[in-house]
Image (cartoon, rainbow, N blue to C red; front, side):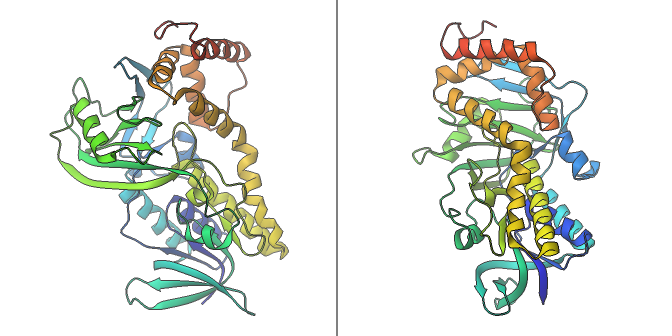
Length: 393
């Protein structure tokens, strides 16, 4: 079978790319390993729900409060005004996206990517069929690598694709307890505590009848399972039934290059598009899949592989500044518990809360409040320099 585009990976990035291409009338295949569930808090903002037509049936919880918890146990509740953050269960959400791509006309293949071979005909994706164990070869004009942070496609085809930095995320899906003083089904808890994660954070996110409890770190000396057990104990969740446990690498920053100038372009985690500081990936993965599909369509129309560069260009046009700000914040505040304490203290500020969630919900920096930005800038510097004590806002 010959394809216009062969998509490797069926997560949010790959499935979105495959669906967009199929709806555009292209011959597209989507290869996915199946049976793997990525560890993920599962948060998707209204922008993602709107832009990617996520039905309400996929939203297992609606969160309208975020609780930030400091190393000393101080907490700040940030209420989401006029909206909510949707929570999805990746076990079902990813499959929904794959089915939707197939319904749009994409050929759904189940197996494992092996390599890319090229000859006079063009590029062949070599993959192992899960059902038969046999090697298959699929000819494609262009290939989208959406196969995760340790992408085989990126490693094989894109310069620098084998050096992407990442942290390891680990979580446990548990049976959610009844609402109580420590757990609320409409609240996300974000724990900034070096005992849980020395360089990132821990979380307790509601998923309807279930909850995701986990943490992330880039340090090899951290016992992720022990840290998660400690988090469960601190959150009163030790006795809750454990449904499954999952771990995976999460990229730290977008790659400098997403294409090979010939026939391959990357999307999602394979391109490194996870937001610094928050680790948010679903929206950015789906957007990455969309711009990769747009770039592939442009290259098909022009016959010029240079158009594959359009994927990174489109993504960075709208998100480069957001990623830069979030990276600066992570570098500034995640270094020590003293800094984390000051960060949670800063979150008491109502301007910080409003601007943060306006930016999160709409996926763009808010420029309409210059005085608020100025106030935040001054307070941010004061907290970083230790000119104010944590808790003084």
